[in-house]
Image 1 (tube, rainbow, N blue to C red):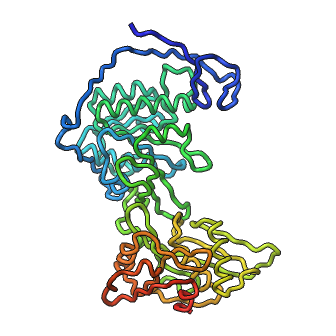
Image 2 (tube, rainbow, N blue to C red):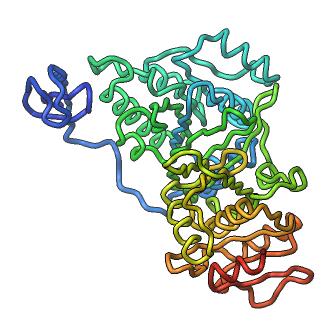
Image 3 (cartoon, rainbow, N blue to C red):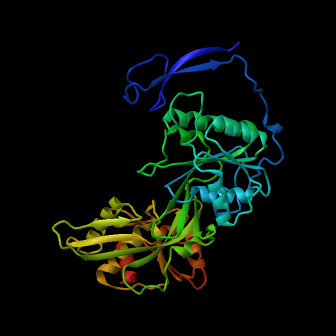
Length: 443
């Protein structure tokens, strides 16, 4: 017969200890150690198997009904995968997963479990979105054990849990949303998904810093971690993968909010560009790499005389420390004096860029604004700038060039190291060694 062993778990950080203590040795919290009974079995129900026992459809993936969502997931939703979707309150996490559920239920049984909303609220959203979801299996319960039991009863192939912060495990005495509850509930979900080959979406809340609320171990337990982002001033939202065991991390899908819910944006580059809208100086087009595909973005710069003793260097969408470095290089090797100038950088549509390929377009945009010169609207550029003023090549140069040509650009300034072996017909591709070479081409 299995023997029960007593252990103590901290409600705040979730650490386990064999002895009770008034203060947690890990997080320092007082009176947070609670007693737990751990049952260990000497015989496992699992047996050893081999890979040749796998089914023939080993590469099968559920299609969510959104090509952009499938792209972020690596081609679709794999049976047995656990996907954690986090985002700010009201951003649309429940909305898009209810749309995904309505699409999937046409092919496989679905179970939608909510601990946050009532059946009426879910029905109202379904009616507003015009979804054909009258036969969807919906469970209003915050007990994770009940949720998993009901999901198994209805033979669900996809389970949606909304949200992990509202789920509780009655075997633990801690409150819902505590670190111990989050860890144990997610552990139960992962175990259920793997044993029953059920794909699971888990909705997660985020902290004010933008990270998913709860212990970091939760992100390690699940297979895929997605973040839902948006710019409050824009109708577009972005789902970005930061971890994916079954696809490339860093993938991005773009969605537009409409009165019927979210619709996918099949050509994301188009929303990040405003060609022909403005003839003002300080705007340059670049090509960035997101996950496994290129995207064209517009980099805007504004340089104006400072009225204060301390100049401003502000950025939106690019790293602020990187801007300080680029300004120093531009002053040294570009013969521009920005000592008394405020410099502002913005990436159109609120996109956040985490690569150095936008160094060259950022510097050119600053130069354009400072000298009040309009560059050709057919110009696109990319490249990393070193501290010695050299232009360094970036990865996927050929693919970036192809993306620029596809959008109709005819003049491309790039590092010499990214020059193609043969120039595309009718396209002017110019390689530059140093920053001064690039400035000579546009001034």
